[in-house]
Length: 195
Image (cartoon, rainbow, N blue to C red; front, side):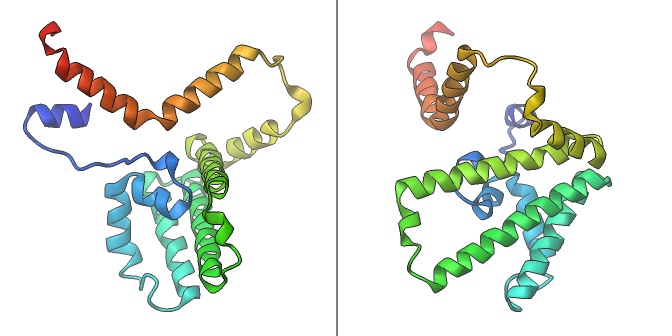
């Protein structure tokens, strides 16, 4: 709504989210998620701390500080800080894996379609799991929810087949969101006489 109202007043807002859930690693996720905040954290926290220019250990430390501060930016509460720490750990792992890939050629098979799909699935689930900490009232609630997620004895409802169809339908809408949006915009331009 803010972007729409700003547009009505003649202000063009920068793109702030660029399909972040379609990424195959956390580095790319943070380049596409909340872009204005990510750029600010990069320019005013990560780079002034030295970025990746002072060795690998310092780079990982700087990443962790930047992500914990990103969590703190959302609120001065332990669950936001832990959410930032969670993403810091993920970025730490992503950078280590990326550095390892550069030093060896044996992982070139990861560049195929199946590897990209698995990397995207892992990234999506890592980010989604992190939202538990972000949306909970506190850390205790987060850990209680996580514990209940993995308690398979307490499934209250039997699985219904229509749920599977809804999941698949939602997945395809999510996957082809840009194309669907382009089709709808073209339809609106071509059918302007209806409005």
